Image (tube, rainbow, N blue to C red; front, side, top):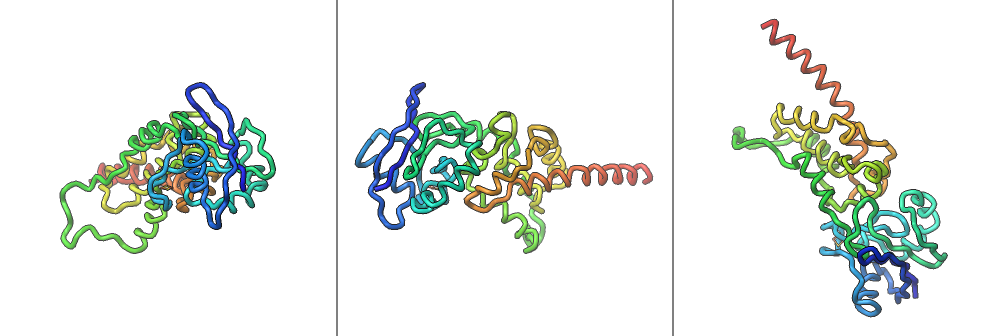
Length: 264
Ligand code: FES
């Protein structure tokens, strides 16, 4: 048997409850939560859908680390307990004392809790909408199609794997103190569309200008927590830093182009 200490919430009432779960070989944390829901407390609320690390809906804090419950094995959560609790303690700010043999389960930080482990994702999606996560290529398709070189495709792929689970947002210290901050997922997505050769040049420039502020790429603390915990190996901090480098490059390009036009 393994003990799960789960943070519960119903309106303003917050409490922690410990459940003993019968562990089976290869059991995931999500399966342990099913065990609790089916056999011990049918009122326990959590989100899931695909059960295969695709939909991103089962993100939560597992032993103070933002992770996908369907992708985290109970045995891994147990063995990593001490190391991660120290590493991520300041992030999770647990209010409960955890015993050596317990696994602590809490909702993702930086988001309003609706009930138990279910958080309100609305603000996270609003931030994502702000960066216009679509290509503005228009109707015209060049002869031969919109082909992309393997090199560019590789660069973009590092960012397209995002499943919008919000573990990065839950791990981000800036998101915790500034709700206007776009956050790692949205900023990584902005860079993904900037890199896309199908996007028109003027739209690329506008895209970069929209994140050229403190709520955008300049707000990041560059602590790499988002990159460290992403379950799909997306690298948001690297994308943010790339945009920081690209902004002055574009400015120089603009000045140069303006000078060229006036000469003409
Ligand atoms: S249930 Fe879909 S990612 Fe975990």
